[in-house]
Length: 382
Image (cartoon, rainbow, N blue to C red; front, side):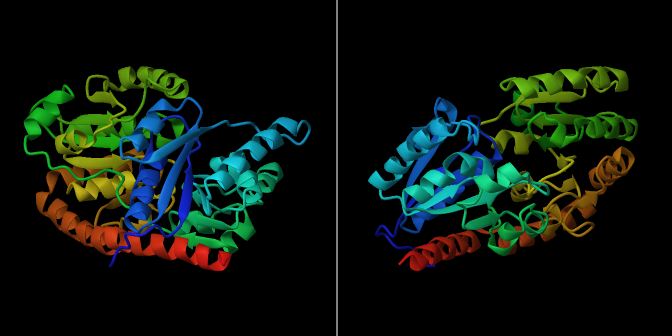
């Protein structure tokens, strides 16, 4: 589709967290698409979020810091003072659309966006089936909710949000970089050169249900004694992730899986991870629509995932991957063994998954829908 070279509007993307994860990578892809379409983009990150700031600055986006003052109805003065300061920043920079990258960002900046004359929208990237009265009130300035999947929209805890909604499927969060030397990729993580490697890209948190994965791995190892599990996701940088990792160590020892699990930590460059693994696995208890599954498809790695959130909108069980119930280690293990031992099946699923990736989650579709989203908001503004 033709891309305009002239500025078409000014969009501020607001990040709520100080670490880099799926939300930050997807916001980067969104800002890149908006820039390609001719929109001017500013990035607001929490004060002190140096890594997030660098992620966007390295791609030549203007990045500003903002203070996250907790909203309070009993002592509101600090929050409203900060909101007025932010509103002034938005007005001075002529921000037309304030795009919060998840609802927490809207909690901190939504009222400031309205005060500054911006159209306030927010992405909803995870499952929020229940939202309290206080949290609902903080989302009153949001006029449009952008959901990453139909499932996320249908299970959102604000009826008004479901009525005023848009579905925008993400694109893979990483840029594809081929890995020619799989042996070198494996060696970089300390993996053995032989045997089937299952990989999961996920921070070490309760959401990702590592206990189920560890129990499944024990069963897999009985059939595939040379198998290994590579985990790409933070287990050291953030205190909650360190704490959860420590709770997993006894289970790893008890099941005999300690030597089979390789925790690589957060990976800024994911191509070696996908180059090192044979099968991608996701054992989450809940998700919005995990783009790591799309990334695995992009690297032609078969996907076995729990059927949670919007994953079924990308992976059809038995067609382009396998879906299993959450907290079902035996079923998960059986599917992992099946995909690892049947190369023809894995190849058929990969081919079907590539078609889904192109047709439903491709870049051209993403550009068109981002343009429709922003141009529609600006037309209504006029």
